[in-house]
Image (cartoon, rainbow, N blue to C red; front, side, top):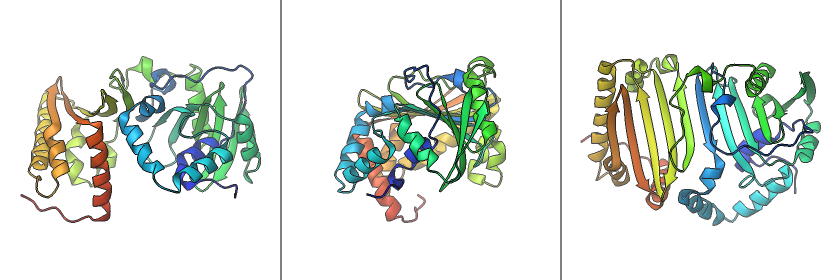
Length: 323
């Protein structure tokens, strides 16, 4: 077997290749839900994935069963386990990705899990671009992979920090130890509150208006202030919540009308896209205190079938006919 990263587990390679510092004070990995005190107040966007909650869902079980039917899945999984020294399906706890700016190179990744640190150090030391520097009591490691040069460190025992610059690793460390103001105390992106049962993914963004220049289909969002997305499963029902915060009642009404039109259009596609039409009919639209909320609740088994249909449509795409 060749010792090289498995493309199927690219996210794992991105996490593990840091090969990080071992701290003498062992501490269990934090639970999966987002901890706003770990995100700096200056972050413009945040995405958090709770792997523990995800593994408890019926949708995850159905997807995993589907992958296990592929003959190459188990050998690739075993190869990844042998290469990295841990189980990528069961040993990761959570992932938080954020950035002060948008665009490649500005993202900061925090991953929690149970790692084989000795194996990680072996992989790191074998990297031709390996370099170690100190920042206070922490060691910051440098390496290069197919995505370019990266920097990383271990924070405490089971928390990995990875970024594309040493400055961003330092920003993450300063936030984690409480030297920088965090989202918890600043009130920025205050909608990042994951209280829903079975919440697996939570995201929020602000100051994104420059990204929408030249994109007419997103013009209504240019007048919004913040956007939030929640995804999870409760009682075998998958739910998706999309919330858009507007700066005024008039803008909120405008966004509401656009969302209402999109849902109505989806309902009319029963002949060409029956699954999309059914999803549109399941959507619930509401407006409260300048926040437009679109909530979609759908059975986990039907969601799994819809995902498979979307995959098939991607391979056999045909233009939509307007009603």
